[in-house]
Amino acid sequence: MPLKDCDQPPELSIPPTFWYRSLVAAGLYCPEVHGPARYWLTVEGSFTRALQQKCQERFHVEILREGFSTPTPEEAKRLNLAPRQLAWVREVRLCGDGRPWVLARTVIPQTCLHGHGRRLRNLGNKPLGAYLFSSPEWQRGPLETGLCKARSNGHPRLARRSLFHRGSCALLVGEYLLPRLYQSPNRG
Image (cartoon, rainbow, N blue to C red; front, top):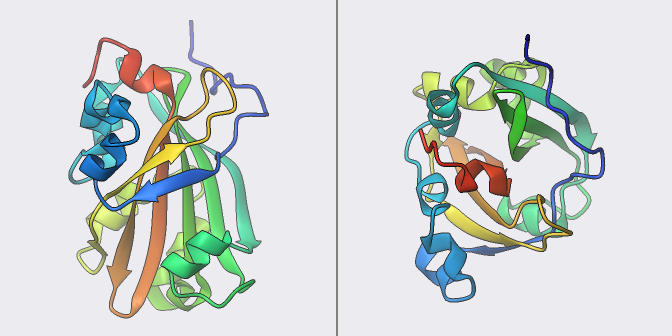
């Protein structure tokens, strides 16, 4: 039977999240970060590649929304943007074997969308990680760990994010783990 796109209720969305500079700090408030999710919260290199390796059949990206939007106040502060300044915001589902595993949100300041950065607005269903990790000009900053305000079972409870820098430009990538990703026996 061919795999369909991710079958997920529309109410699944990026939850409000408390961010910590380290896994250890987040673990003081939520021991779950030290369990099976730890692997996914600390993956070095391309998170997309790690998800692809976990797949038995197929990995794909579904765009939930993308376009110019106002980042949250916390995101704007993290990116040193003025309040209410527009940025390119991309939200996607990362799906493996027909099931959503991760919600991802990327905030890209307008200053990063010039020159080679124009490609960031035209990724379509291509994973952002494939672009960032194939381009030596982008460098990842330290990973942060997030504790999400989950709305119900099946919604993200844990997240990770980092800044990617290219010269004076920085973009913010957040990956919100759905519990089925780290509760399934096949880690990758």
